[in-house]
Amino acid sequence: MPMKTLVQFINEKQSEYPSATGDLTRLLNDIGIAAKIVNREIRRAGLADINGYFGTTNIQGEDQKKLDVFANDQFINALKHGGQCAALASEENEDMIIFGNKYSMQGKYVVAFDPIDGSSNIEVNVPIGTIFAIYKRISSVGASGSLEDLLQSGNHLVAAGYVMYGSSTMLVYTTGNGVNGFTYDATVGLFFLSHPNMKIPENGTIYSINEANYRYFPEGVKRYIKYCQEDDKATNRPYSTRYIGSLVADVHRNLIRGGIFIYPGTLKNPNGKLRLLYELAPMAFIVEQAGGKASDGFRRIMDLEPYDLHQRAPVFIGSKEMVIKAEEFMQEFSPDFVEKM
Ligand code: P6P
Image (cartoon, rainbow, N blue to C red; front, side, top):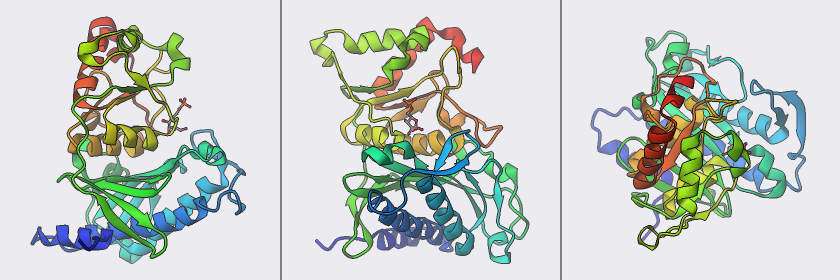
């Protein structure tokens, strides 16, 4: 059966919506083009002068890697010249980016993205990823994009996706009607549909958490980890633990195999490490659309209203039954933790 390209798939899906104007289609294609360019550099990382530090720090206070800056520039340029996006929020930029050109001001959408999540893994050849979240602007078309356009909860996402630069390069996205995965064929420069209608297993046997932080975890997380390690043939425990240290890779593995990824709040950092707007909300949209679940231990990630572009949130994301069980431990053993967030 002939393979379907990403562009063919997006166009086909657009045709299912008579009112669709093609703007979202063009926006998704712009993201796909930037992903191909970033992929090319990543695949040459050991050879091209793309490893190492750029010599600046980002809003996160992290030393920016050359690849962080390169990827950020590619996505910003693609979206700026694509004309569908009125404003941007990037993990690499403290403030929002407003495109003042007349085409972009006519754009109906705004995008929040993490150009390269986990870039410190590039030197050790561990998978890294790009995460993007697309919202419909609230401000009037023709005006400049606004902060209000970007500070929307996950419930208002129009589309979300990630690119995983792993043993193969995959683009996985949803527009709210299921999740589909595309694998990049560099010999022809195209993404092809390889994982149609992705569904995460209801349950799983993999738990993914950085246990080095165990001593700082809330009691509910500690109890859940011990639960995962207890013998119980009926529930396939003890589970296996897998922790890549790259959000996109850990979530993608669980999307395929089943499992739970947890980056909890701690007594030191009650909101954990990961960013709501351009990491957790888009990943939560994808996982929910695949039949999974994503919360902060108490509240659905998609319900959380962002008040800041770079705010953090704890996350329990993956197979529905596993997230429900982890939430039960949080509610029983750390009920007051929600007040700290
Ligand atoms: P830790 C990578 O730095 C990242 O932002 C995510 O991709 C990953 O899930 C997490 O941080 C790993 O954090 O504290 O376990 O190294």
